[in-house]
Image (cartoon, rainbow, N blue to C red):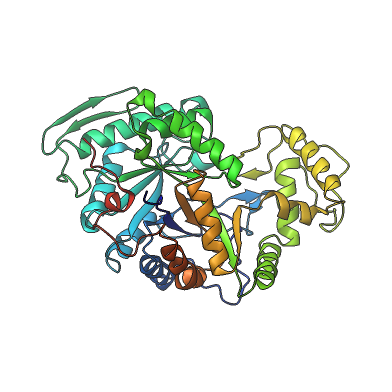
Length: 425
């Protein structure tokens, strides 16, 4: 029986502290040369697609720019269209918000990208309802959080109707949108772009099971990955979909070495650099909702409780809804681990799934993870830009190919070909 094949994508750094910008080997996040080097190396490694996150406004922490994150990045469509010209097979995935855009314009931009790239476009649909993000848009932060997936679904329905109209006039009406006219872009090479979704709430999972071609998940361990995999794919039948129609890709990092000991040392060095003392305190303040700058990052957790109603970081998706419960869990974890300091605890709790070892060991770990149905592959988030994928492509990809679980060449020109997806009806 053929082995399940591993899918790989590459995340150019977004709003996070994964990339160690203080490293002398880190380059620019705005210089086009960075995008070219990163994308061409991903293509050399036969990756399915490159992935760009979205930041509509710089985040603020304690009323100031949160400069522990990436500070600024170019427009998604401009970057992806430019990358299309310097690559031939790599898929081009862009995160575009469904709350602050209109379907006609957005459908035209993605259809154009799909044409210009020869069928390599992907749209990562995200929702946002916060006023901080919406202040710079015509409708502002108008949307009730409970309605955000309704608007996302209506946005997608309208865009899909435009993509598949094939020259026929469109007369589409919903609560959010009225779309009338003949779409100016002909049918695209993929029918329409591949649809990626990353929401993890119950509403987000339903939306993904109904609509997505790929899921960008955040479930790292094998057990958590398997639970998410079963749950998400188990929801698809009621929408008349086969489980093979969705590819689940958790974000992951990696650290390599010539020996296990060297890899472990590299992994520890990277994690320590990713969580500086200032980053540790900032992460803690996001949960506590208080100014904790007087606390020693190498000391114990604060003995005061979080302020449940406060949110001092604006522009951030808050995955944890109950700060008091998080604080209690963190205190118990710190004690169980022998008295972790604030920084040690943040390193422990904010780590993504990370594969650490020699290239052969990392390949084996990734293969085991996918064969156990904890995912269908990974979106790699390297700690260096733009050269963070180089060692992986040179050393781990050949090991995956030797295991028989990774392609040795692209089998078609489009992203749907890479993912084994049919064209939409």
